[in-house]
Length: 113
Length: 112
Image (tube, rainbow over all chains, first blue to last red; front, top):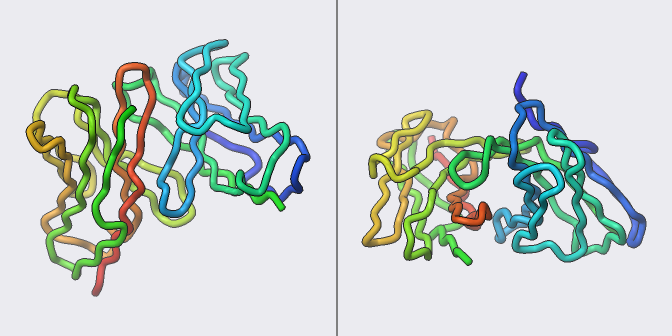
């Protein structure tokens, strides 16, 4: 089944404790992206990647890191999480960038206390 | 940078009534436009997309949207609402550079 998977689905952590949210797609897509969803703000793009070793900042990259060492994986790293990063995070992929719809993962709900 | 405006964070319609969800974008260059739907506790699913072919785009579940360049709008409509349409709807825009911009979403309630 074609899908985007994220792990974990739920995470509660404390301020400053490094964490990684994994994202993997099995559709051989070139483009992958991370978003955060907050009430009243919609989805905001954090980082995106057009291909392996190519990443770009979205609208809200501060406090996040990403890497794209393999085509199928695009982990999101929070090196020192803060409470304002409490949010619902979505990973998405598409065949290429702007021309195609994105396929979204199920989401990761992160709480930072 | 683009901005995407969805007027009305909450819309309520009666079952069987017309659904109209509004979306306006800021670009002077026609972008690629998308509508997504999000059901509770799920990720987003594509409803339809505009990619500079026909200005009236048909999507899944009876939804359609019309691209109006003069109004920089891409409003989503459905002639007759069904209870299963209750969800959150997001308008999105992509542009050269491959960045995506989403609106703040409209929560649709369908009243029986």
